Image (cartoon, rainbow, N blue to C red; front, side, top):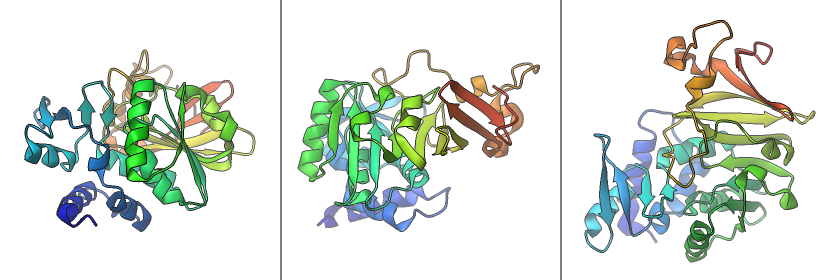
Amino acid sequence: MFTHIAWRLDAMIAAITDHRPPLTRPIEQALRAVPRHWFVPPAGESPERDGGSAPIDREADPPAWWDAVYAGRPIVAADGCSCPAPSAVADLLELLGPAPGQRVLEVGTRTGWTAALLCRLVGQSGSVTSIEADPTVAEQAAKNLAAAGALPHLVVGDGAAGWAERAPYDGVHATYAVRTVPYAWIAQTRPGGVVVAPYGDGHALRLVVGPDGTADGRFSPLTTMTWTRRDTPPGAVLAEDVLAEPGDARRTWADWGEPERERFGVTITPDGQRVWLDSPERVIG
């Protein structure tokens, strides 16, 4: 069915796995079955290696548009809505581990690509709810998803509040970076369920919800999701800004060394968020 773009899909997946372990079979199959170009706007901007960005326009320059779609970079539409880098999407889906029959909440529908991938991963026996704050973005995402034959339950609302009407969820997947994980995501996830989100700049956070209503998890590397003017949280900061041990001179992530990233973790409770080093008992921020 997708013979004309098979080589592009091969190249995209090869780029994703260039510096990381191979994708699990379900994630790779979903990426092949739900082509990214279905969800990329006809015109927008694509970041370049030099830090700038290049305009892309499917009508004016189709080859450049196709190259950008499958080049592995984020793409930002004129309205500020972004389609994140494929590697970032794959990283978060691997951390979430959605399985057939599960109920998943996605926070931040964006273009609808991740929602469509989640629908593929949980299957007809599962259920995907996706919430988007921007009505205009949500409307376009609904059109993209309908054209792709994906049928998540779409909601327009505040993602930080989750969507309690369809809870409990087996997993919560955030598509935008956060500084503090909203407790609503934890409260609406069943014990043993997983919450994943980009955290700061270049980090991912995977939390497992416990029977007591709290959640613990650790950081891992993540390709930058690209915050846009629409989905940048107010007062957003980098993860480094909160990883300082009391009494130290504001130690940054770099001070610990990049290989030490996995030593850091977070606990989420109804009272807030605690950052720790090595174990939840050693709170550092």
